[in-house]
Image (cartoon, rainbow, N blue to C red; front, top):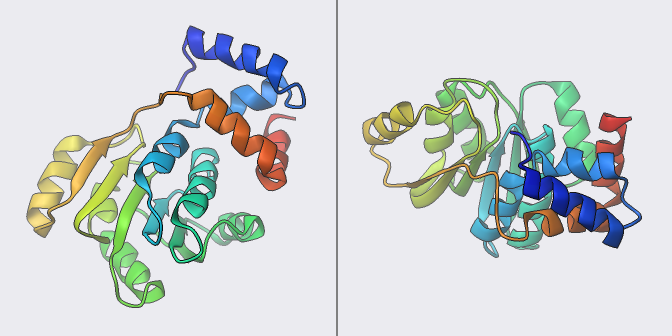
Length: 206
């Protein structure tokens, strides 16, 4: 997802305000920050949030925002594809539970979520996986009247709609939007207040 000119200008402007954040670091975070700013709007206190692709750049920002949003009585479940990604996510401390599973295998994802969540479905799923055929894996673990947010640009909305119908799931599905009001301020705020996020993103751009 590319930065629009006005976002780039705002990021440079923000650099003058937040002069402790390097421009390259700010832009790297802003480029993938759309899902995190939406997560802040969607997640509520005491809810359970599942994030697919939780160890990616956008996924890490989502985990951080979800953790803040749901509070101590909520739960954040991160799904990753391998042990290396699990170790990265575990290091951050952003998730209550971490699942290693194939995001394309909807039955595996559902079973793993139920296993770590006391047999309960989640309130919200945020899909940050850049891979095809993860639509049903996002839908199945979500309770009726819950929310599925597709940030992945690989999402097929035909598959999502038919998958929800086939599974008999009455969920609200939202198309990913890379921009939210005060998008840049929110992401820069996260970098400022969380040394772990800042370190990870700095290592990615160095």
